[in-house]
Length: 234
Ligand code: 5RP
Image (tube, rainbow, N blue to C red; front, side, top):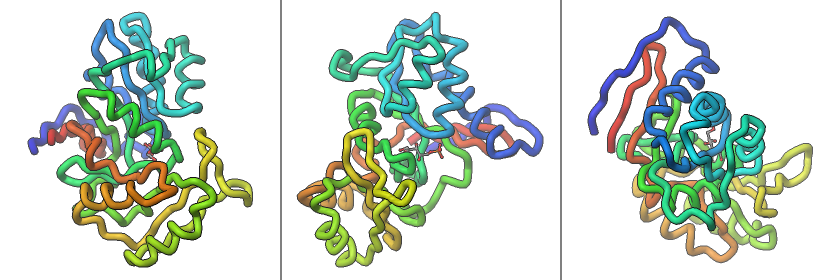
């Protein structure tokens, strides 16, 4: 892994850090191509910055209904992922990233489509602020998209691993994802072997997607700090 400072700024707010790293990600967008776009508040800053390049790209493949709406509102064409074989780059945020580029994702409930678009992309560029960089994944509860009828059994399976799964709610009701499924947030896990964890949980019946991205890990992390945006390469 190497680390290279890109720029500096004085005492930026959290929102300014997100805007800084969103703008910094433009350097990875390939003119003339379609770019993979993730979801979340940091990616929203990237989408806003991408509007300045909209005449230089063909468009985007999006990982959520929310990002699709934001891209289209800015006049950026959104392609179905089935109509695009390969993307050079996928740009997305994360809830945690370790020093090998493994991530926890799904805080915005878009993990399934995020993993799909990441899988069709040659390079994952993760855009985060420095608070998201960890030694070991698991302080942030792991989001898992599940089929509703399997919620109780999967909750027990996580308990056997020492995890505490809670059903994510919105307005007092189970949150329903873009794919019509539920989210369990699993606290209390220390994920020292991300690939082994992702492999195991992905096989449990009723799991749609586990929010550990070890097989679709980042190759680049742009890390926003008050001193500037650093580039970590994995
Ligand atoms: C959405 C995600 C987001 O990338 C992740 O939650 C980070 O979001 P934010 O940039 O708002 O902190 O995985 O499912």
